Image 1 (cartoon, helix red, strand yellow):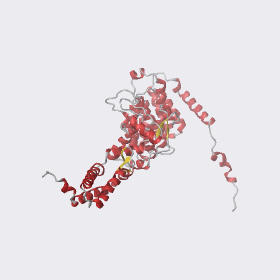
Image 2 (tube, helix red, strand yellow):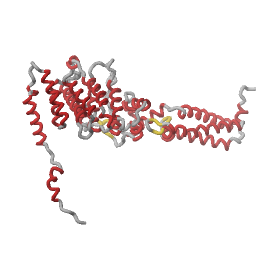
Image 3 (tube, helix red, strand yellow):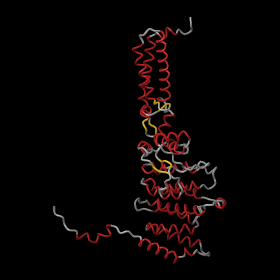
Image 4 (cartoon, helix red, strand yellow):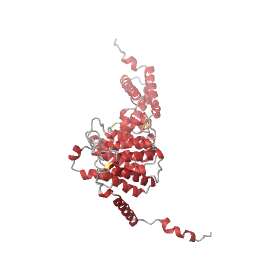
Length: 440
């Protein structure tokens, strides 16, 4: 007598019915997964409709196959042939093992491979490598790689998910847009997937050995529509700022990232939260980090003119963000903080970049005339007087002498007048009262 009586088991109808019942119940419990969402994507629906276990084989096909095996077993359990019953029993047992594994690996918990495929489905194919350098101005200045955008856009699933800021979304943000993101994976396997599905090559972002990468275009798509621009701006800067306790030296990609961030704040910033004094206080800390460079680092750089050009552009973008109040008025606390920051940068040596005080003052002057903001004009006057006080007993550079500054302002205004574009209101406002009545 054997320890397990196989023949008795495979001919026991009650055992077969129990296995079938367990299998069908577990398959039916797929609905439990519908309560889960991965970056806003319905986990259960993706699992059943799109998730592929091996190659083109979706889990949906396996569920259908095992469901057919279990249903057909009800009709074949009365066949008494030993060989048939044995095969029948083995199939049901395999089905049971699959059902139990499926339940614990995919339903009870969020499967890591399913999550990875969701990330791939949502993030791959938005941008691709090409010879096009028709980028936004900041991207051209920061020498972003050649590439183009596809018709695919970041889905509303992701945008809506990241409209909430909590520990879960913060962790997901790091996975989706951080250093370990699929966006920065240029492995042979990923290249093959992108080539097969989209017929393109992935867009290549620069990645430094110290962990500072280009901030992705995919992130900036999120930024434009996000209701949490305050939080995600600071979070993306934190992720790609690098560990200053380890990476003390200047890194050009860090400066590029800040430059692109502040440009997007000016072009696409729309949340009231970014016009809060706390935001500008945090933001300027990353500006100081991005621009800080030692004389030794500077001496070893062959692209000093390019670096100075980027710093000039970045500083002017920062000034514009702080003082361009035409579309988004700033409150008194924000403006006071902006004044303090500007004074710290120019007069109080908080800034450690390549621009001199004189260059910073002239750049601020250009923005003051351009923005035509009375508050900024008043502030420039205050800071210029403080600069003159600091320079007592020292020679003031010719360009910063009072008469030269006045001339600079007049010449700038003349250039504006020469380039003036006539508006409809300006052209027709004097004739509005002559408009004849129209009788219907």
